[in-house]
Image 1 (cartoon, rainbow, N blue to C red):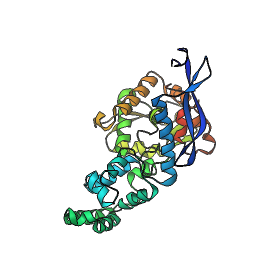
Image 2 (cartoon, helix red, strand yellow; image 1 turned 60 degrees about the horizontal axis):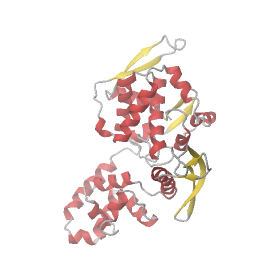
Image 3 (cartoon, rainbow, N blue to C red; image 1 turned 135 degrees about the vertical axis):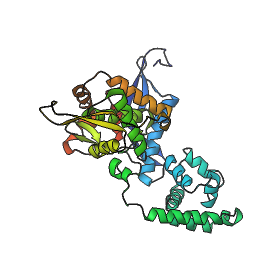
Image 4 (cartoon, rainbow, N blue to C red; image 1 turned 90 degrees about the vertical axis):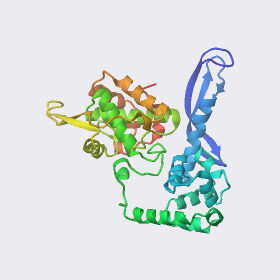
Length: 334
């Protein structure tokens, strides 16, 4: 980076620093550039966005404020426009749309949005609102009653929560609600590109999510990762890969000759087709970057690379979940 002060070299630095939001301090990995000639610090618009996103994520997590994707999902469940959703919750005509585009609700408005996720509670909110009578939404009650019935029959723990972890965005899933379809497509992508062994696949998934988080403060999949002997892995990687095989995303080839007669699994593409449209341009580029970085490397080399990461070194002792905050210190894919 060229220094705006001297035109000389400026180096990207990261340090723990407190920033305040709504009068509350939050410790983040603060990014800035350091002018090598003058010692002055400066940021860019992109770094300001990255620093601010960290603060906002921590604030949302602390106060259980829904993230934009969650709010959009709640509204779409009831097949309502952002305008009508806003009026039903008595926010003001354009407020819900602003929330879906990144504005952070007050804690009181956040509680209403969370309550609205439950169809029974939303039915009460709808009937109590002025928009119910003014815009003739009586037919919506039957639709909501069906949702109440359908959700009452769902298992308490969904397959997504079982395989990927908590559906509430936290620092351990990259502040993103887990997405099973995206996860399966990520597995398929690497099966097509690299035919990795199980140990390698675990690391490819880890680096995809964490390298994307490093630049965007959100993961791709919403997976929770933990540290085990052989490196960082999805929390329930064995069950996850079994599900991918059962659904036809991968074919599993077994080999007993590797690693002292240990039964090893190699992942080959299954009958499903990779759907690039499920990913944003930036997410898809992150997958391609990881595939390119590890192309030609064997499983031991991929595993050894992950063993140099603080995300693994500082969590292996207790085999505990890995905070995505470690993404900012990634040594690979720089």
